Image (tube, rainbow, N blue to C red; front, side):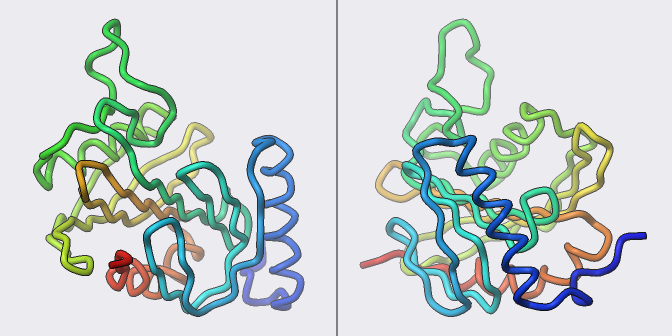
Length: 202
């Protein structure tokens, strides 16, 4: 029987998250990891204020944050996605695949939502759906927020929320997801507050 993480000590939870971070570090090679305590954090040109502690895995123009391990919760942060680049920076557009999830300057709110959802589908997610598409102001830049649901390739049902904004011709995208049972409901309010309050450095 799986016990809720609240029954595990905070110290043990942090150790589990750091162990997951170290495992991912071994896979990514060029990434570095740190423990991000709750409070203010600077990520590329962003400022985030979190009520939660995270294991933070840093890479070029992208980071992965997790609390309990990436299968149980993950916040993916992408900064400076260029036109014709994959929304999750997996690769650049090729003439042989013009219909991939490529970022284009000047996308509408619904196109930004669909771009992120298509990126998740390409990774193997199924039953992907978006909801609650809404405008969001980040500092002095207009962006979008939306919620989504999906099932991963192993059949686990996830819920999540995302933020996306085009700034200076490049895309910033933050995507948080966690299993629909327990982990999503435990942290969704705190994560929404963090994403709604995201600010760009002036």
